[in-house]
Image (cartoon, rainbow, N blue to C red; front, side, top):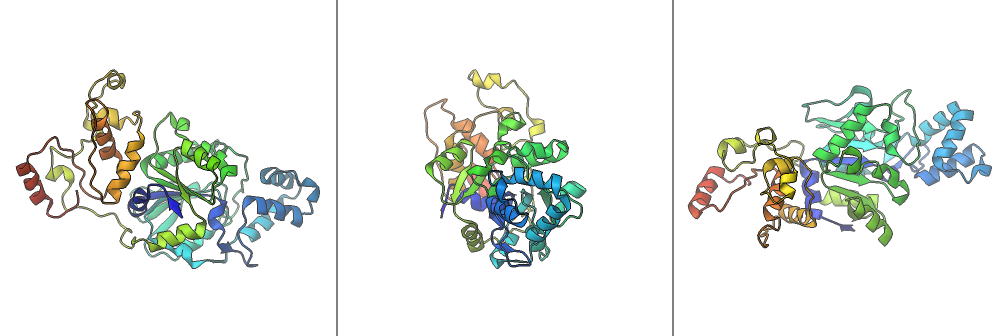
Length: 376
């Protein structure tokens, strides 16, 4: 098993992460006939066998479903409900209950997650396709079954072609919530392959006017060099593993205390009014062109999200999450201050974030006393 930026992934699992799940996620779950929840290509073959459509072997899953929707709609729905209704699952899935999940988006129609979280005593799934997002409720996990769910009576099942954006064409609010979630929290994509890449291309920052996402990981089983290069080009960190290996890895982590986000007795702003990061609403605004013409970076440049993040950004963030001390060296005007400000703004850190300009030893000692052993 190989994980790029492993320290940052562990931090995301503790402090808040989105899950975006595809068919490969549910392969350790079974229906009432003790049959494994299928991958797309297996489902297509099962449909041809069940409905005696061997002559349609050239059709993809979405094309095959389009044919059955027009000829045997009720029979297709009954078959899918029976095929994707989870009765048992591998207990290793319960490791997810210790992950601090912010939102879950899934293209699967099974009810694995509903069954899993029905046993949780601290979190619940809020289906935003039915009730919309719930605000200010830390016990809620925003849940979006993008292609329908067997757990929802009357829902339409969608086996669309490649472009995920089409799923949201009639619900702009849902699309907005998805893209906002990718900008607010790191995201783990799990259960996708190169064949399913269209749904991931639809989520590229170019679809939201170039606004950058938080870090993204994708789980790939035995990827070749082409897959690694492709997903790296889409700004993903690659996890080389299968579903069981990822669940076992999560189970091995110490995540038992992440059900609630730690709250400091005093805010950073109250303790360190001059060293705390400024609020985005309080910083002066200037045209971004001034930065590119050579101006010193200001916080408005950083908060705009329009500055490119170099490869050093994710490397340094990962070192910090591993508990390492980092020194960044470079010639004048090479981007050290910009990099520092980007990291300070974006890093997911459960402690005080402080920005200091050449503090004296006395100043540093005073700040240590004020921290009273809290993390910074």
